Image (tube, rainbow, N blue to C red; front, side, top):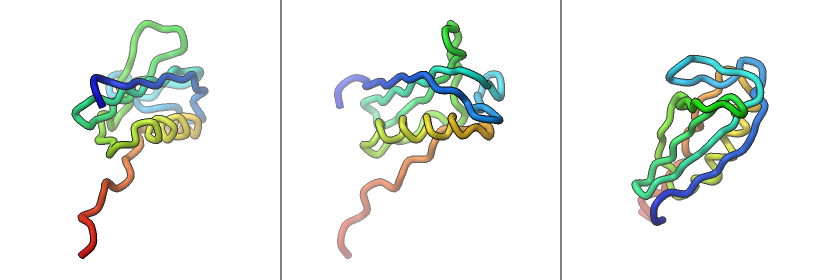
Length: 99
């Protein structure tokens, strides 16, 4: 991957909203932005819909193990579910191979 790849979607936070590092739980209509960087990390940021300020989704950044788009989808699902949603944990990376 060269540079950064980014995904952004609007999402309605479920009951209990999404947990952020800066302001705690935020609720209601949000925008989720997921940015994957060349160093193998993925960062999740959220904002109130149409606001200027972005907040870090608690638990971000995380390693993406080559599947940043899947982690964006998992983060959307987590925010929709609410419950003070945090950044999703990545699945296991490639194993060590056959023994």
